[in-house]
Image (cartoon, rainbow, N blue to C red; front, side):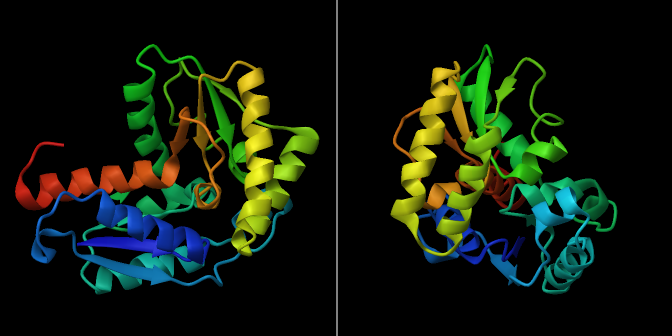
Length: 229
């Protein structure tokens, strides 16, 4: 059974659950993946903890993992990129594997860009500052991230998406994506799970939420049905 450590934020969790169903090959209800969800939006802000020394979300996330384990989960997924700053600490305190969202994106990048190259990263200031993607992507990938006013605008647009103002957010996301393309990005990672709620146009986008759903579906097929991932 898959456990979903959610609530960061609630709409992103719901989007992940929808994609999880869509990405699971099943022709009957009974062949779908069993899932339990712990969605508690009161987990402290991840970027604030990284950038400003705010309250750590780690204790709340650990409680969530414990609840998921008690409900029968034997693997976990976290549909929040910035939360993966605490991945090692979480993994060290649970006996179930946690499927890493950046590893899932790396799988998709290998399919899209076998030779690697310039990759645009649209992500929160916390994700960028913590180097979450740099630590897990192949070294041949050259990451291009927004900075300065563009990063300020991106953070504001993420807040709009969290608040349900999707079209307003989409306009900003589209401008940021165009700026990364102008800098030479050959693919653009939507490295914040709010961005796919209002995705900019373009067939060069990689949805981290969807990539994680694919990785979870492969884990389920391999662990439950014995199908090679």
